[in-house]
Image (cartoon, rainbow over all chains, first blue to last red; front, side, top):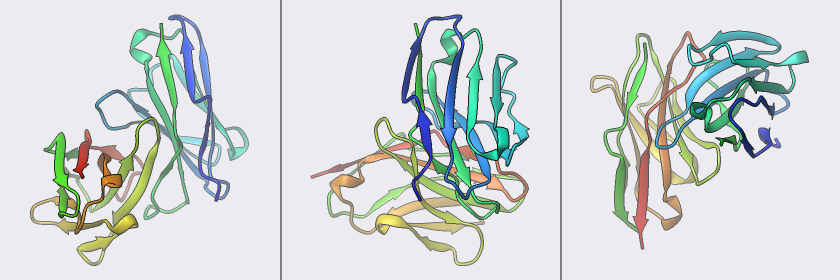
Length: 114
Length: 113
């Protein structure tokens, strides 16, 4: 298995701009998750998909955030009108369709807002 | 609501000595517990899990963890620490009805040569 792939690894943008991140899960995993990690903290859950259906969303996922997973393969996370507080590492994870299986994480996209 | 506490921000241990990284949890149903390790500028790497069964679970790289239901703890252990074990360790929990993982704040492990 080739692992979870995230692109880009780093993104620097000006406040107010829109950004989009991509996640390619492990191929046989039908569940996909997005987390956000700020400095000195553990990852915080944002949302998750089973195939193409978005089944859970955290209150952290404000109206400026949108996630999609067309065709149940890769996923994108878009942040509109970025704010300073959006600066963080955005982590994607995937897992098999079982509650006993662990989530496997990508290396993340680090977002810096100028 | 589910939560995880990692009471130590940092743990220092000499190479070759045993190590313990502590974790306590709170969850409404049966806990599914996980340990992950994170190296600088990398994602989280899965080490081990407890779902059910034996209270002592073994994982990758010689790590093990002991589940204690009465103390709601899931401490990570290794009999002999290596310098390469130096990293950030996260404990995570979810109940059986959710796929959402809740993480602790992490414990920085430093193994001193």
